Amino acid sequence: MSVDLLKLSPDEFKKIAKVVYDRTGIHLEDRKLSLLSNRLRRRLKALKMDTFEQYRKHIESAAGFKEEEPHFLSAVTTNETYFFRNEQLWRYFENDLVPDFVETKGKTKKEVRIWSAASSSGEEAYTTAIMLRELLPNFNTWNVKIIGSDISSKVLDMARAGKYNAYAVSKTTPERIKKWFDKVNADEFHLKPAIKEMVTFQFHNLRDEFPSGRFDVIFLRNVLMYFDIPMKKRVIDVVTKALADNGRLIVGDVDPIRTIPELSAHMTLSYQRPGVYQKLKTAAQGAANKKLVKA
Ligand SMILES: C[S@@+](CC[C@H](N)C(=O)[O-])C[C@H]1O[C@@H](n2cnc3c(N)ncnc32)[C@H](O)[C@@H]1O
Image (cartoon, rainbow, N blue to C red; front, top):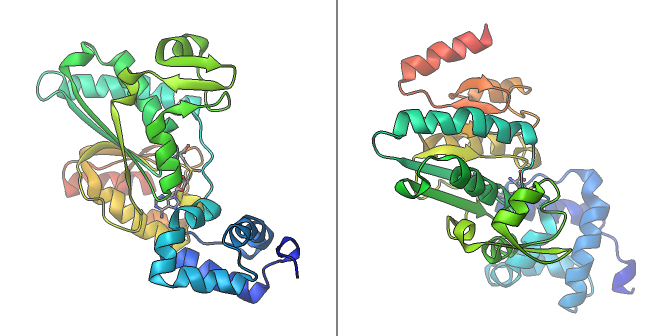
């Protein structure tokens, strides 16, 4: 049969979904069968393979997975993102978080550490860079470290390149586009070095502990929804550990933690407002706050 007509059988789908889960924690529901068929069919063609079984056996072997990893991960992940995604969040960042940094750190260390976990192609991390550059008084006197990480090396390469299309900047004001991007044409915008050099990108699988830590803010937006409950809990533990005392976890537009009792019970960070949790300095403070939130 021509590869174009191949469709994953439910049995083969389950086997490939298991590889996806074991490698990434992403839980592919049965309704994703056609989507996965379409995405992997392209890989079969590129590798001149005749069946999905052949492809699955290839990625199940350590050597095959190593070779195929960037393509496989880009086929199974959803990387949708853009600058200034969720206006309300960036207003909170501007009106609450940055003034808090200035008040608590402005007279001492002047150090701010941010992690955009599951950064995709970098828009979230660079939005943070733009905001801090615009809002921190005497910006050059601050030590700002922003890290973006993702499991897909393809999106990390895009992030490092700092080149974006019109869709990526569709929620960025014309003033900001003018200030922080070089417009090459109607559909190509290059970040200026002043912003690009503020962020570093690295591979990280959210199943694993993050190697460096103590962040003031961790963004974990639009990614938990791809995981099942055990993986969600594991990721919550990873980011909780990586937060500095009083650091904030920002989980996103529709808070996926409070709406699930099992996750809410697992959470040790204190709820602050929709989508925002804080690692209060002492455990006692945290526990007290947790009770307040539950009441
Ligand atoms: C929809 S994007 C979210 C981008 C950005 N955080 C935002 O909200 O606009 C989800 C990203 O999560 C990444 N991802 C999925 N599973 C992951 C894992 N186990 N570890 C790290 N990143 C993962 C995907 O590669 C993808 O780039």
